[in-house]
Length: 399
Image 1 (cartoon, rainbow, N blue to C red):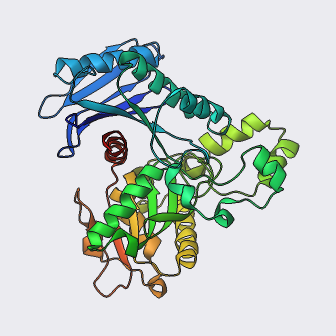
Image 2 (cartoon, rainbow, N blue to C red):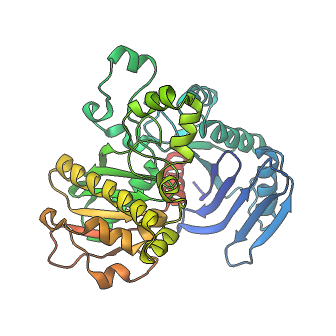
Image 3 (tube, one colour):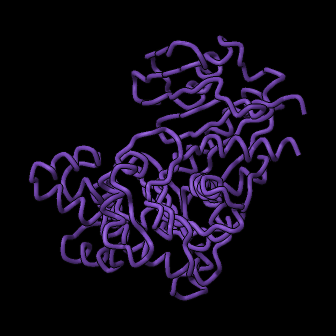
């Protein structure tokens, strides 16, 4: 097909992130963000390739108004949604359940199924749906492709995806491990194999996606066999504001002893826990600074965070049997040398080590930071979820 451009939309509850990519050479033609949608003075930041960043501050009462403004900015650069060069709009959709295992062209049936999954992703799927419907209205003839966070993890074996609760209850209410950050885990596991110069089918990778949200995955030959997030993005690693793994009885205990409602416990575990709950900060740079100055709460938060990472690295080593690489990615994973060093320290028995000089060196490209003698490569691999979404969307509509 002659059209090679893909607009990637990531619609959040009060924001829209977007990138326009040309898949002919994987270049970015424009990037932008609309934030504080529906909150009065919204802000749109738009940067065309090779151009100056433009900023607009004005009310965008809803996603429809925000996306119309985005379309106007793109059109001003000759990159409008009516361009014959635009092949598709790729949408990040957080939850695809068991139904969606690959990128999917959106139709009425797909929209209805994404809506049916709202109860298991109430913070994300509604915003994703709004982005899709608004983009459809702006250009009804343009293919809209949903790329699901959960899709990469649907290759997990049933024994890894199942929780040990009554099967009938679990099936009736869709209770199982789904996993999230799938586009990042897919991209990074493949990029790690490329970094090692080996076919992805031959490489076993543990991926640590460490941003404000954080997740781990065990990837065998390009297929996910285990991941840390579960029914929701709350399970697993310690995160910026989320607790990660806790004893389920904590919920009942706080209800009985503290009189907290389920909504209050939900808010506690999702918004007032993790790093911010432990030390009041969810910025790892600030936590490391405070720790170096002797702040005990920051030191505890750092230690709890790293301890959880080490537990998952050990567990996923056992799951995979053979590990070829440990890959750090996302904001913390790519930028925090202290986190990487502490995670690997003392794991020489698993074949893991980092070279201090390589670990502290900052680059924007994928790199190996382990010494040559280490049997497992430790790598820093910048993630690119937008490129992954665009790649999957373009492959679908151009096939």
